[in-house]
Length: 339
Image 1 (cartoon, rainbow, N blue to C red):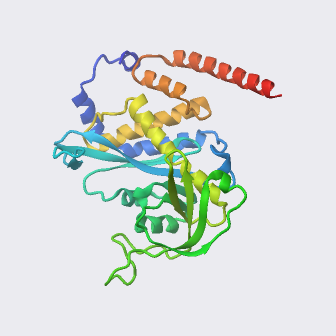
Image 2 (image 1 turned 90 degrees about the horizontal axis):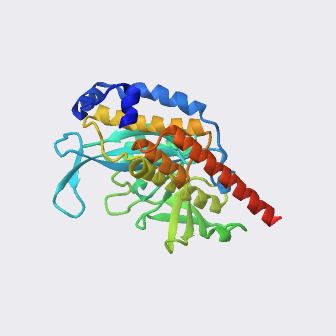
Image 3 (image 1 turned 45 degrees about the horizontal axis):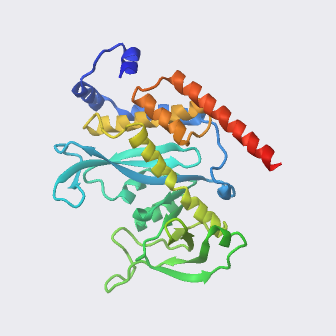
């Protein structure tokens, strides 16, 4: 890109040269820089007012796949779709602070790294709420979260057995938030001959009392069954926390489609990790520069143009200032009309 040439003073760098250089860099040297910038990010109010009563951070966990060349040995080799053709891929395991819309932690998984839930167990943090989808119904993962003194909100699979000990009356706000049932009980785990302790392939189920909250998903016209260890918050708050899981899907979409982060420059584990860390640094610097969340499609579109060298930072600054001014004027007009 011309902008990179102007900054670096180099007309052209061969892709193989860049890949070889990234393979020699130690990506862990970037972690202190990431932590230092994270501390400078201003604290933002809750993204969803319904979760204001929850003091801990809400962190969404998920992994996203990125394709590699077929000869890469450390990649996970699997079938492409429903065909017999093999595809080499790696998975980026991301922890996203949903209120800040910022990566909190990440690492890379390849061949032999186990399931998605097991990969996240090695980097769990304390005093936060992990919100995850059905892929994380893994007793080992749930036990690890509780052992780290954090909590979880996850969507249960249909086949997971839950023994109900008590059904609770819904609060006044629960029906308005499409809450159908609020129950407490225990995960009984799989029961079969020779499996007296109800152990699954991962571990025993958590022994403590858990909560099952069933909410109605109006968009998809289906029931969502949520499991959590949060017993002291209203049922509708559990649903509000789970809705924030989609923020991590938005982040992956921004990274792949708008920024153009679809192809990995390097094929080595070090180089791939370095490239992801640079993407994290980019998102942190954008947040630090703006001082607030930038989740609008308009702002993300400009970031994509910058990445593809179709715009300059000066052009983006002028456009965003104009957009912000128009937004504030529109808000003032609507407030005046309401009065």
